[in-house]
Image 1 (cartoon, rainbow, N blue to C red):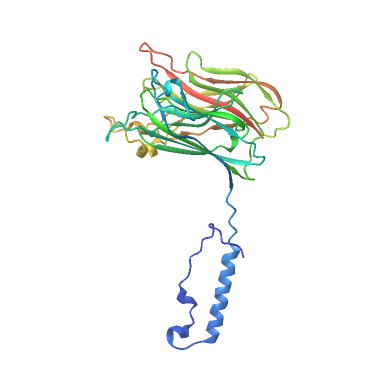
Image 2: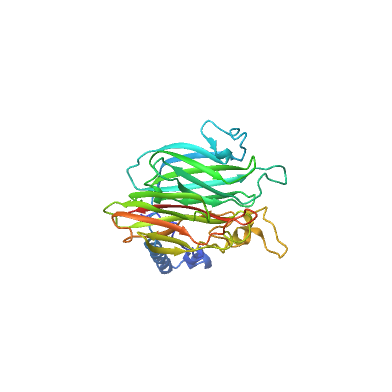
Length: 363
């Protein structure tokens, strides 16, 4: 007999409907008993016919707990004070590093990544860093630019957890790799970070067979608004080629472009424009509850609610996907990524800038 699936929806009738009337009113009607038993058996078969067996739980092949409560801070003179036996800081403490060795599982894998950032309390009412900060967890293999695994913006002094299925990163997640957690904080201590990888056997996971990191630039500005032209060699035999771009726009003074006024992003292949888009998020209101230190302005608006160039305080930034199948056929190509009209530096020294990374995937 099949085990009913959790997808089956069945509302049980009143049990009294299946009781012989004789048990209710003092006389037993055998014909009525046979009729009700037949009805009950028919109902059981109908319910079972509409149900399927529960699929087996995916087998967990490997779990990596890369970071567990590790501190991220900014302290150029004392960046090592939160170093541990398995993690070490860089960038004056704003980055934490951990190394893992990922085996070849010889099967299709579903890869789940989860990052948690917690503000560090100063006292019962305050935290050390109440601001929204750019952050990410990235992968460094030593074979090209780093790859952002999860890109996010912290909440205004709030705890957040972001989970993402990153099975598409399978070509990069093999052998010895360095995992880096980053938060753009300017205080010490600032935040604590957890980061986990789960690798599960899943025959339905369609992992790419090829990948190439293109660039990781956290500071595209008006004076250098372009990445490229990049030389790309597409291997033969691919039926699909996809570009992933992770992007967020910012400004140094919280005014206007390029955080609250988006700009055109242009992707060109072999000198020809193939994609043009404008990163934008207009749903930031839904994250106000995770932003405990958001502030209300005189016009009644809240800092966390404003629409922004591809991000919201307290949420992750998922890759924007562009199918370049056919455009990037097998062979050599040049690829160029450009942002138009980035706000230049003004007399006070403030300017707009973009945090952008990209990689190619092939199936």
